[in-house]
Length: 260
Image 1 (spheres, rainbow, N blue to C red):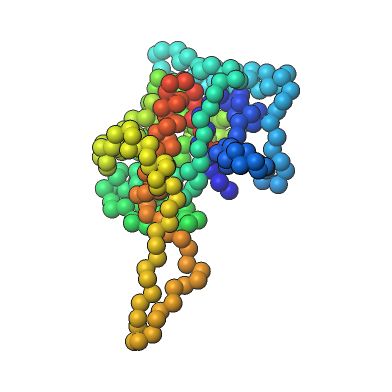
Image 2: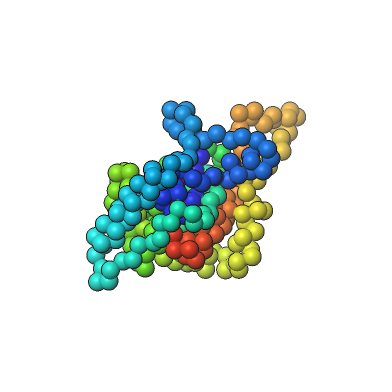
């Protein structure tokens, strides 16, 4: 199962009136890309205006109730759920997003970042990630956050989505702060450099070591050996995508969520 970043109205998201990067690239090349659910059924966009309006009303009611329940002295304004607003999306997939999570965990615990990860790896199985997450740090990247809301708060809490699924929710303001701090600690990169990470370091496999002579014989590489990626390269790739999502969400005052 892949993973996408989406920033836009939740009405557009839940009515499936958006296309991920894979769909967009397929269409540009004259190909068809079908999105399916866990049962293999095609997921089609909602076209009925009345049904879309029902989704918008449900989302708006959810947002109003959620923001009203937050422990703050000021009333929290909700964002505009107009369905024709533009959106941002990209696909870090789990390897790159996991590399960013592990980078944040290593920085939080002052541990060295492993140089490589393999394709198909799971960051949440890594001891350093488990340890960082168990410490309940005030960090949305280490809190298994599913959605960041465009409200003037820096908080993390658990609440149901409009679908009823209980998830960890944070805010765009907090994610922005976390990314800025990670950049300050690691790279001090300017915006042009950050944007280049998306294009230059997107899942470029690292080369496996060349076969070596052992007692006069060549040791053949394992044919089942998985592709390896430089962990920091993958982390920078995911960082660039989230950076752009935060910039878009901040300018447009819209949520960011992970789709998988």
